[in-house]
Structure formats: C-alpha cells, structure tokens
Amino acid sequence: MLKGIIAALWESSVKPEEVETETVFFLNGNINELPKRLKLFKNQNKKVLVDIDFISGLRSDRAGIHFLKDLGANGIITAKLKIRNIAHSIGLTSILRFFALDSRAVDRGIEQIESNKINIVEILPGIISKKVAPKLRYFIPDIKIVAAGLVDKAEEIKELKEYVNAISTSRRDLWNYKW
Image 1 (cartoon, rainbow, N blue to C red):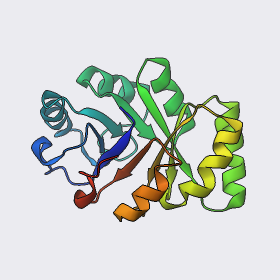
Image 2 (image 1 turned 135 degrees about the vertical axis):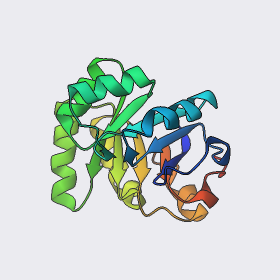
Image 3 (image 1 turned 180 degrees about the horizontal axis):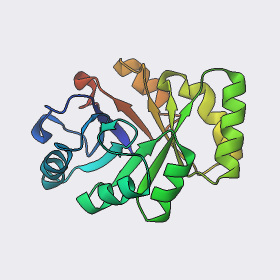
C-alpha cells in the first residue's frame, strides 16, 4: 500500500477514475462528504488514508479514529503521537508526520520515533528525505518512509525513490510516474 506514488488529494472534487495510484491521501474535506467520498474510492479498489487532523467536523480523538475505521478507511495520517498510537492499536495503518525543519528537529524527531517504536513516518518537506531518511534508517532500519511536500518534478522522484518507500504528491502530472 505504501509503495511508489501516492496521490495527495487536497480537492474533494477529484474522482477516483482521475487517479492512477493505488493509494490516496485525503488531506482535507469535511465530515459530511467523507462517507460518500471514501466509498467512491474504495469501490475503485483504492487504499485510502485520511489526514485526521484536517477533516472539518472530525475530531482527532478515539471516537474520530473509530469513525474512520467504521467507514472503511485503511488508515490515518497525523502529527499527533497519541492519535497515531490509538489508531495503530486498533489495526489502522498509522502514519506519523515528521517535520524536518532543522537538524535539532530531526534529532528530536528520530528520538521520539525510535522510543515510541513508530513503523511509518511521513517526512515533510519530502524533498529533504534524501538527507533525513538515511539517518532515520540508521536507528530504525525497517521503518517505512513516505516523502511529502515540495516534490514536484519527475527528476526529484527519481532521486528520492532510493531513500523512501513512497512519495505523496498533489501534482497530477506525477501521479502516473512509474516507480
């Protein structure tokens, strides 16, 4: 599921047939449209992970996580460790956002990821994954890494794919990139 290109959907108007990727990230929207939207993508055999922190009307708490699971979401994306841990405990794929803002943030993030036994992270901005991923894998060799943010050229994907498992992008022209 977390391999290759992942379509990062900021617009709720995007239809499943417009997306060639196996996996999609719902990065915004609202709780009223979410059930229908999720069903449309699931009916097209897409794996759907929802950014629980950015769905209007949906709280990033235990009830919100169970709501997403009951709707059929494959997983969540969050910047909140507690929320990630709850989702992981009930069997949802759970991606923890890792903001690599500077070397101190990277070191502290790696400490947190290692001590909490996180198995999947999303590095932001993704374009710097080639610097951060080797350091992360030194401490956690089997971690899955998704690069997200500021990756907008095929040449960048070609370079980054050596370091990460997947790249999340909102650029439609990159959704058909062959990994």
